[in-house]
Length: 474
Ligand SMILES: NC(=O)c1ccc[n+]([C@@H]2O[C@H](COP(=O)([O-])OP(=O)(O)OC[C@H]3O[C@@H](n4cnc5c(N)ncnc54)[C@H](OP(=O)(O)O)[C@@H]3O)[C@@H](O)[C@H]2O)c1
Image (cartoon, rainbow, N blue to C red; front, side, top):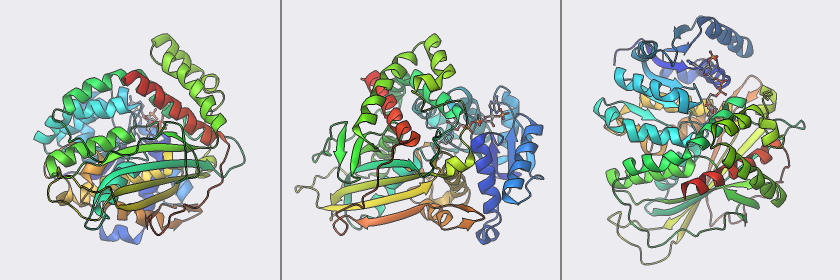
């Protein structure tokens, strides 16, 4: 693929885009860069804004990126998108909400034979792109991979990683628990307003997901003989020592898609998956569930949806607002993702063979980091793009629209992410830690203090949103 740039960051002027530019500029100053250098450019709808963003990142990092090439492209101008895509090997797309802006970028990338990774956590968007563009992408041998941020790489690649580390055995099910807390004293939102817009728009279009699934899932998956233990949606988990409810984002659907394709195309035993978030206390869970009902109802009609978007503070009882959190506040957000795999010590010959005995082996994966929505998301997005660029031989042989867990199962993505976590640069600590523990040796997870603050409240709010979606789907 003779292209001018290896990577093009589309949406570099946005909040997330600037984190992506910052991380790329830091990467290019590491010794590892010399052994695997890459060319890159930024893209957006205003050259002036692109220059301003590059200057502001240069000031922040002390690394001058103001001379990096700039490409002007607007989602409403198809020709400009094709021009952009034609110059890149991989487009890193951070222009959202993706439901409104993402499809034309995917189309341009497929038309120009350009790989594409994005940060969408909007389930209707990810499923629509698979349902409508998988075959086209396959025909053009283009890899369209998403969502490649905090949603859903820890979950989806975490499941694939646990499968790989099961050493001669096989995984039956994985349950995961996410926690987030802020070490800051000031109350602040954990994300910018654009993510709120994305959530509301995703909710508004949830009813379409079933239609896309009918197109995507044409063959059945085998019924598991040993069903994953079902938990009451609101339950106390000893694993993470706290009250938990189902995870609100796209992770379960993304993992399901990976398992579907792993079974049908790689003949791998499908893993059952359940995802939960831990919340500070029961009161928060109940309070947020109340907000959920309003969010569910209001997101369905144009007029009431406008109200949700206009008054986020009112409808989220003060949890979310149009006032952006500062970088310092975002850096104080810590996350931890714990995934526990349960399965057997031995692997049977066929993916459909049934074990007679109950699962007899467990393995736990813990991923921790800071600022999940922005810094960690940027690190993950870039490493997925570099994996496509540098490990093409380990990706699915044919292109297509893929989940990260399926696309990167045979690559070194986890090692790449881990290596970025070990780096300490200027005054920013990138602390991705990936720990693998045998549960039998570590039966009691370390107790973590509960934290009551906006971050945890947000998690509970998101869970409420998840329940709305589930209600809509059933
Ligand atoms: N899954 C995850 O882990 C994760 C993490 C972070 C963010 N996100 C998602 O990423 C998206 C961006 O978030 P953000 O906070 O960075 O938003 P933002 O600050 O509002 O940035 C949006 C970007 O899109 C660009 N844009 C808007 N309309 C455009 C158009 N017509 N043509 C070209 N570019 C256009 C903006 O350009 P201008 O500067 O010219 O307006 C800007 O660069 C959201 O959907 C958010 O939900 C996901």
